[in-house]
Each structure stands twice: as C-alpha cells, then as structure tokens.
Amino acid sequence: MVKTIQEEKRRYTRVIFNERNRVQAVVALPEKQDPAWQIPAAVLNMSEGGMQVTIERKKFQEMQQGDTVLLSRITGIQDLESLRDVPIQLIWIMDNEYLEHVLLGMSFSALSERQLGILRLFVTNRLALTVERGGESTFCS
Image (tube, rainbow, N blue to C red; front, side):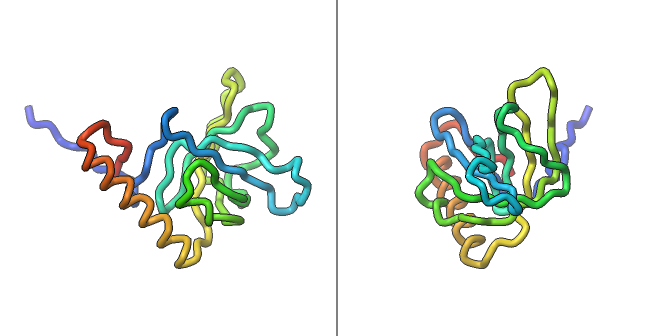
C-alpha cells in the first residue's frame, strides 16, 4: 500500500505559539471607539496571511463571519509590536456554547509593505531558530 501525503492547503508558513511563548493581541470593533470594546485575545498561530486567536466567551462581542475588525496591537513579541490598527477579516468562528473560549480565524485585509515585511522577517527568523535548535518545531507549512 502506497501512502500519499495530503497536500497542505495553507499558502503561508505559520508560527504556532504555546504556553512558553504566549502572544496576546487586542482586537477592536472599528465603529466602537470605547476602550470597553477592545477585546483581549490569545494568539494561537500567525502567518503573513492571518492568525488564529481565542477569546474568552464572556469577553466575546457580537462579531460575524465576514466582519472586518482591527488588530489594535500585539504584545509579547517586540518584533510585532509595530503591527497596530491593522484591518483583519473574520474568516471563520468556532463557537461551542459548552467551551469557555471562542476560536476565530482571521485574515489580514490590508497590510502595508512595511508590515508585510515585518511579518515575513518574523516568520523567517522564528523558523531559523527552530531549525537551529533542532528541537520541537513550532511551524507548520
């Protein structure tokens, strides 16, 4: 029997974050200027195409698939702190009423060339570190 490798559907290499290298983001609804509408999120993975985050159910606001929200800021990684007020589109929402968190898949809508360069450099550098250490991979193509 011949095994075939399932073709990867992802367009970009992504960095997967875990407990050791936790990254936080703040997501805001563009029409709401009130800081109470800024929602803290844990970033699970990120690529130059987008990111997956988890938000506590009690802090989750009314967002719908297809909505555009703002990535207000990222904390936890100095190289990414310049990514501010970036429009991101909600591609999918996984909302199970029995779980404490809601998962969101988001796509960067309008990165500047500078921001895209920052993300590419970040992913490349993290990949190089992982290969150097020869340890557990934090990337998935």
